[in-house]
Image (cartoon, rainbow, N blue to C red):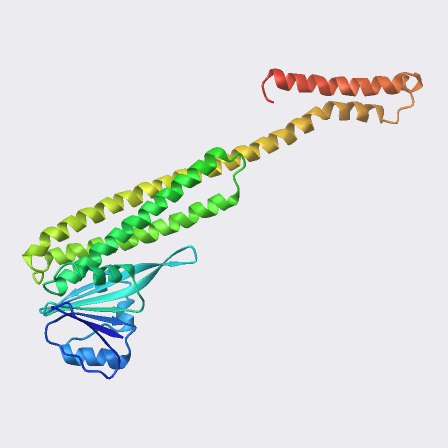
Length: 310
């Protein structure tokens, strides 16, 4: 499907085979467009759209391409997937002040851009591109704030939970992966904005807005770095708590073992098959041996308590 946006705020949705009126178009939004629809757009506007392979290119040099009369941009939008986020490629082309967008699904940034068209009159496709990018940066800020809240929740859980389980470690690892994905996505936007500031195709009145967006992106990068440091601290704290718990268990086993060593030694001595052992012939020999073993265990336990090892 292809949506055509006109300067008079008219939105026309075209299916395959329909011929649109191209005059006064400032934005062409292709959503899971067919090959026929792409060819129609390329023919009507004399533009070469990105192929699927070009949109998914991971090299940074392929993310921003500028020629004499057009700018081509490939960005990854984060989409929720299995508790974390995956990258979904979205392509932008700005030519003759017209914005061409290629995507395979709906995004909040585009929905916000649709709604903002009702409140402000865009001059050209540059305005819409910056609006989409600005909305996406706001969405990144919301994601970072959500991660910050989850980190605070995990912190409170670890403080009040006397017996932390491995699920907390898995949650911390997932948040680390999510933070890395968000950071890479934000760095990508920072790189694009820096390239746009060097471009001569963008009007001068947009430069101040882009500089503000770069500052916003920089503050988000600082926030992601801070969150990652907090996650590393929580991970180390969790591992420290686990080590303390393991040490406590090993300490208990060690104390029990040491306490029973003297009685074991006494029992071993009286278990030897020597012919002459005076206590074997005495009537109180067995109770004496039991008492001696109990006293040795008690003495060992008392020694540990005085040393504050228990």
